[in-house]
Structure formats: structure tokens, C-alpha cells
Image (cartoon, rainbow, N blue to C red; front, side):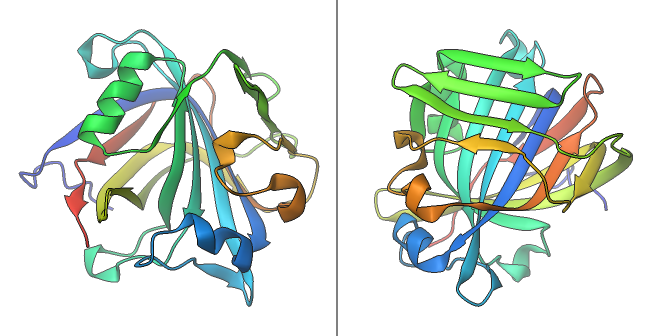
Length: 233
């Protein structure tokens, strides 16, 4: 895959040294209220859709001046726009939290991302491949890899990221280049707590089931090329 950094479109490059994403199965009827009318949940099976939670640790120097910070994203996997290319996943972002207020301010203005708020506690164990996140309202999640000896491979992936502002929908193309490990092994991957970060999704009612995990090799710098969103609908 060729990352189109010479396309003439605006984009930013973000360097990260830790990333952990978990995708969960949830009944479609429970995630549909999280989506704007013109987007459709992508089903993994009839009546079963996917939500995703992604944790990043971004290295010092993002935007030229930011110190190291952590990011937490919650979204719903949606049907992609194949005219833009075939992504690994297309995601509608429901909530974004961060340990950096400057990052939140930039994300709202540049990426039109839905800002939830600032994190009050972040714990990352690169050895255990585990994280925990909290804010002033309490625990948001714990998350961990459940497979011993991950086999990381150098790879590149393309994603579509959808957001909304007022009555408009926007889409941004995201390319990731990193050493990654992906698995669908069953196991204990932590806990999502019933927290406002997950919007109107009642986690206890949804009872998410793990579908897939993607992990980057800790301490190995990966790159995220995130193009400025365009109005979609």
C-alpha cells in the first residue's frame, strides 16, 4: 500500500509507541442509536455489529510542541465508502478523551472529533500490554492482550474515520504504518465499565463480546497519517 502523502491534501503525522485496539460484538439494535441517520452499522453477523475502543500513547513532539500524551477513542464500525478505497475498517467516532487539553482542542477544530473530556488517570504497562483509564467520574476501562508471545509484523493499514458536526457528516482517511499483531483468540481482555464515555450505550445491557484485537509492538514508533476530514453528507 502506498500512503498518498503527496496527494496535495492536508494531513498530519502522529508518532506513537503504544497502541491497543479491541473490537467487540454488540447487538445492532443497541448501537444504531449512536449513529447519524446516513451511516449504517457494519454487521459481523446478522443482528450483530462491532464497536471499537482504541488506546494510544503518542510520543513527545506531536504538533511540534506537545509532550507525550495518551488518547482513548470509542466508535462504531460502519459500512465504508468503497469509492475512497477499501479500508480495514470504517469507524464512526462517538467519543474522544485525552490526557492533553491542547490535543483535545486541536482534535475538535481540525478533525471535528467529538470531545468527551480529559482523562484523570492513565496506566500503561508495555510489559503486560495492558492499560487502565479513568476520569473524574470514575473508571472507564481496563484492557489487555490475552495472547502470549505476540508475533509482530511490519504492516500498513488504511482506515476511514467518520465524524459529525451539527447536521453534517465528515470523513477522514487514516493510514497507519507500524509493527503490529492481530488476533481473534478468546480470553480475558479486561473490562468496559458503564461510563458516560460510551455515550448512550449501556455496557451492562450490551455485554460486549471480544471479536478482534490489534496491538502495535511497544516502544517501536509507529506512524499515523491522518488526513483532514472532508464533508461527506
